[in-house]
Structure formats: C-alpha cells, structure tokens
Figure 1: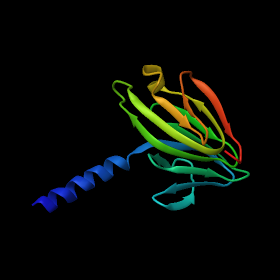
Figure 2: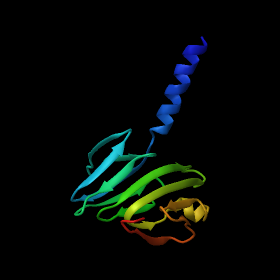
Figure 3: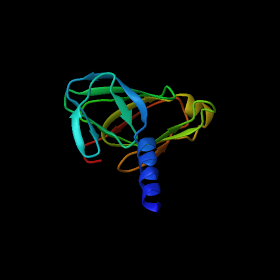
Figure 4: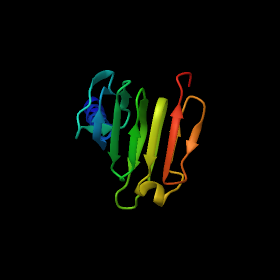
Length: 144
C-alpha cells in the first residue's frame, strides 16, 4: 500500500512540476529548448515549463509570454533557464526566478511584480537582480 501511495504522489508531483508556465510567441533563427536533458527546435506556440532552458544561436532570438503576462525576450547567443515560476491567477501572487548565463534579456514584468515588487529575480554568473520596476534589459558577456 505504501508503494502505491508513493507512485501516486510522485505522479502528482511530476504533473505539477511539468505545468506549462508560458508560451513561445516569437522565434527567429536558431532557437532551441532544453527540457529534461533533451534539446529540440522551438516552435511558435510551444509551451514553456519550469526548469526549461532556452538557447539562441548567433542569428537567434525568442520571445516568451508567461501566465502573469510577463514578457521575456532573449537575443542572439543567449542561454536562459526558468529556475522557478509560480503564479496564482486569483491573487496575482507568485515567484519568478530565471538565470541568464550568457547573452541578452529584455523583460517587461507582468501582474506578479505589480502585486509583489520583489517576486522576480534574474540571476547572472556574477549577480542576482531583484526586479522592482516594470522593464529592464540585462546583458551577460561571453566570460560571464
């Protein structure tokens, strides 16, 4: 009985973790998504999930709209990971934590940051940005 409960619990946790948190709205040039260790080409309309990594090539760019209407755009040669995303559509409370390892990122924050100004963080190899405004741009050079 305990084993069956563990399997059911693991299935529920996996389903929650695999929840779609956003959607690819624009993709130009070479853009890939890495999910569970597998890379594939991005398509417009494709779901984005927590723990996904978006990778753009030298000619690539990608735009993502999240459940709270936050907009993220990654430019050429970028590597962006969605570490954590949680959003309550009723209260607009949530948490958004992303990592930009290289490249450029432009952000227009959505409902979550309007509700809780400290709800969004962007990590780079050298710093953690606590987002308090509604629009910003981050650039990480090749050396981090």
